[in-house]
Length: 248
Image (cartoon, rainbow, N blue to C red; front, side, top):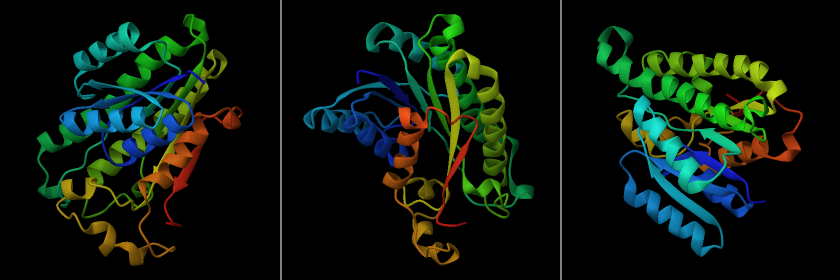
């Protein structure tokens, strides 16, 4: 295949599962991380030992300058970009809105929303046929919590992810004639490390009874949806959403 994909927040959880799967399908994978350098390098080594191709690059997507440096590095060291998985995201401890501080909102919005927008901008600048690119695909990550608003838990996170859904639709229509497809995956309750950031590492196990399928999902199941949206099998799909949420 020899196509290059950047996965933000790729050192763990859904990002890592996507890196493994895409590498197994022939993609050359660039794994972005912020602080998990060891995990990112171990994942890249694992992919290489399995016969795949992988590289790592550090950048906080909430930092505009860091994103620009990351894409410059990709241009120099990794090669032409054909796909982007906007996976990087953060949550904060569960609480009601009136208990939250504005600094929390800045962190949530700058990472989840502005980071997604910045990475999408840089990817489009490289992939758009109107700018000399060969086309490509972007998959944004939202959440099934956008439907409920995550009351009493993560209304700020749900709000930021809702904006990503609007971005997905608008950008998909904006760049469709430029050979770039933009889609979105909405994971539900997935058993990953992110729940520890919300203050309850066991949340996936505790909340499974609220899911119609009566279990938490696995990162690999979300990765399958991401991989399909990046594939040629999804060549007529843009501005669309896939829910991987167990029926929620």
